[in-house]
Image (spheres, rainbow, N blue to C red):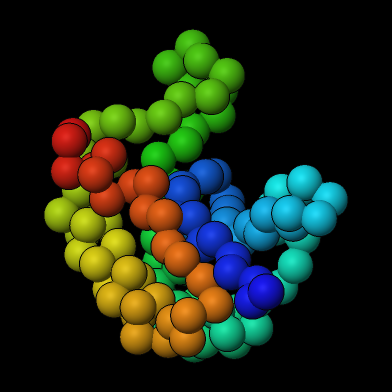
Length: 116
């Protein structure tokens, strides 16, 4: 049986927006970010897009700001909505270009951003 990995697009502070997982039916374990996926990890275009997304998203976080331990700037996220949607489209398009059938993509961010 051919292994098929799941590539989830999810934003987090100071993290690459791609989360790789694989469900092992033999052990019934879901392995998340435990393996490197060379097809994606070695793609220069994907790495460039991911770095830009990570930098922008992480810039929304402030610490010890406005009397809060951790503050998320929702107004700036809204201001950057179109730029981030453009980056997500580029990322999804590139993932589709290189996909050799070994992974599926679950984009958890595009619809969330569109709804802002």
